[in-house]
Length: 76
View 1 (cartoon, one colour):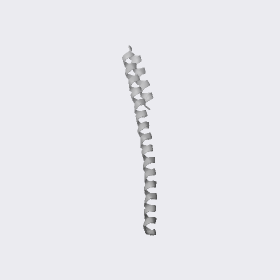
View 2 (view 1 turned 120 degrees about the vertical axis):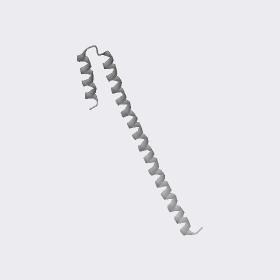
View 3 (view 1 turned 30 degrees about the horizontal axis):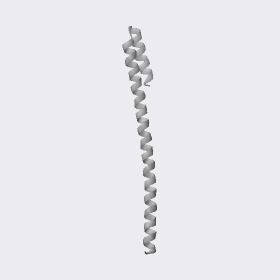
View 4 (view 1 turned 45 degrees about the horizontal axis):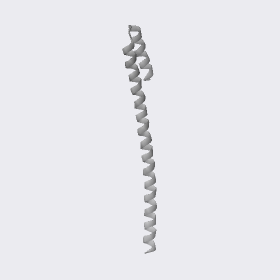
């Protein structure tokens, strides 16, 4: 084979491997980000569930106000 062709193929393979590594890193970052988003959403859902439970258990106006205040504080 021509040395120039071999050199070009070598450079192409090197670039492809670099691109593959970058794509794998991007994929890992995307998966981590997706997991972080999922965890964040789960925490928000739990806050809402606690709020609903507090509302259900509130048997006085003061307990309702306390539940609302507690929920407002949790989402800040």
